[in-house]
Length: 151
Image (cartoon, rainbow, N blue to C red):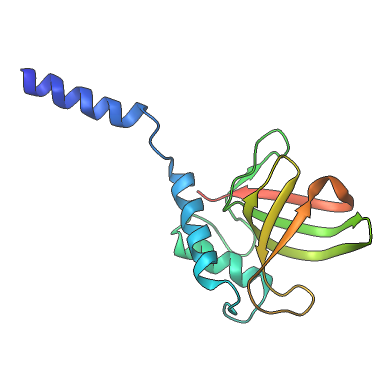
């Protein structure tokens, strides 16, 4: 009887005590994929290819072309490395310039704070290799950004 109680306690502790969620594991796998492919061309070099191959590597439950997972209600929900980003007619303006994303897909690589992130993406400015770019989300002046978490 003592063995059963001990086993049950260990089992319940494992379930309820800070075990990583499936989404956290998938996000970690997505970032691992990005890390091993920085400065490399994924498939055709399209932005979507990076996202698709990373989700497949993480064995995420997603449907091509644009069902990347569960939509995140940013800024209410915090972003995490490995989240997917969809840009539609987006423009960021900042001192000294601007950057645009007519239609673009990327991965949150690093979260610096609530507004500042680093993305991993490819096929921006005709560079068809995985690269990183720092963005301040508060400098968005137009367009729509949606965030997704892999499931």
